[in-house]
Length: 171
Image (cartoon, rainbow, N blue to C red; front, side, top):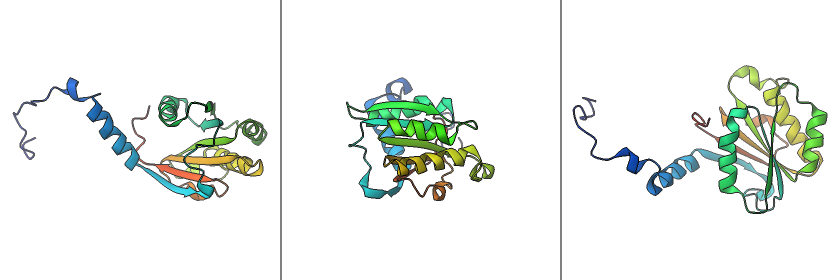
């Protein structure tokens, strides 16, 4: 506080009038938008204006509220969105069956450490199989890589890849 010359000074602004205000929400949106990088957008599938039924697959249930919020802000009125949690026991057969019902699949990839990068680890295996299934069934496949987006090279079959930096606090 001494270095920043704020020692002993009172904040003249009431935080209850700042947090949650329209200006605060605008700043949040600007920060969030600058943290998103579109790495791949084959055939201009983004934005998803053509999508009618989307499956969002994610590895942790604590992420669902943040993903639901984002989808509510992005989706058009006619878009049906369903969610699927995936894990070690998710099979390729289950993936192919699920993908068959939707025209687009958004798969969240969250690689936290190097062991998750092994192609046999479910954190890489499931998103890879999801993108293979979307490609073979002529569906739209999108990877959203959160946390450390050093996994995006695994997903050759994805139509779009989005890297989102700074997911801390999403839950």
